[in-house]
Amino acid sequence: MQHLIQEKKMMRECKICKQNKDINEFYTKHAKCKSCYKQFFARTKEERREYRRSHYIKNRERLRKIAKDYYDEYLKHDKEKRKLQKIKYTHHLDKREYYDLIEKSNGLCNICKKSFENKPHIDHDHLTGRIRGVLCNKCNLGIGLLCDDINILTNAIDYLKDNGKMPINTKQYTSKNNGSFIA
Image (cartoon, rainbow, N blue to C red; front, side):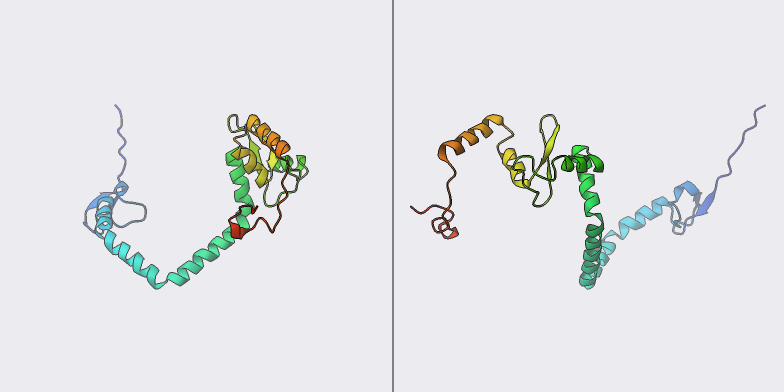
């Protein structure tokens, strides 16, 4: 003969409908059952929205200051951490690999050999994802705008060789003339 073991169900009385219901019919630490809670929430939705709106208007300056202070504190402490997280997410480099890449280039751009003005940009092949090195912002933008195409870059080199580098006379090239040359 099999013995049937019955679980003793835990019951609780709902504060709203006054019915005894299984404990699973309640959200944790709530006195209202799930169905009554959902009805209450739906019924008071507009009231709560209006309260939040009026509370924000009354306390706007204080709430803005709290948000700004939190944001400033967050930025101050986590700026480096967030930068490294972004690099890990986009380029799959950990902290050590990123700093090794910069050290390998001696802290200089791999194209113009100048130090980085702001932050080094990780140059990578957009088709394969292979990392080529670190570049300054100008060099990274330059090869990016030329679509990483060796033929276009070669044409640009030939163009500069054929036409020479034109010195800009500050008297002839001014912002008043919308950046155009005066003959």
